[in-house]
Length: 181
View 1: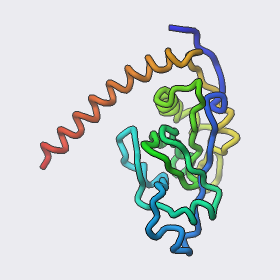
View 2: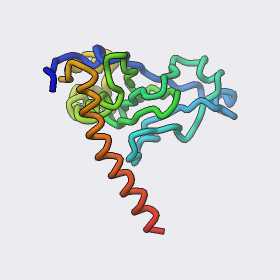
View 3: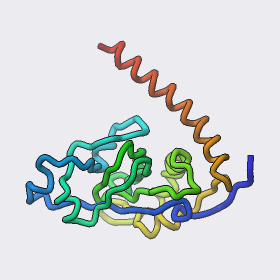
View 4: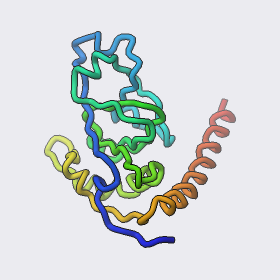
């Protein structure tokens, strides 16, 4: 293994917030085909990859607010209500304001970043503030310090091992679900 380095989340990728198109305008949602995720969509979600939430938005909804279309393999990280749901975008999608997601840069393995954020979710949650409910700001998320292997090949070795374990767990869940019926 290579040496590890201390860096910040913003060194690993671009931190992106989300937004919600006006729900008073049906044209933002009706017949929408853009996946739009909320923290509620990740409540009880046990997989790694998510392709859609309960609602989609339209192109008009996308352009009506500050949400951004993120590429496949972006890492979704809920930043409030609660802090710490983590999933991988299975396709292009956007989120509501309850996320501080990370689009990995070319030197960061997306799967490693997923496991890194899962591992650090309590640390990140402890940085949250607020009176009604805790939230981690975009600025605070960008400055979270983490330790990572210096090269992407070693990140991939680690994520490959963890991913093979998760694949077996997901397989067992599917088998158990089938047996329950």
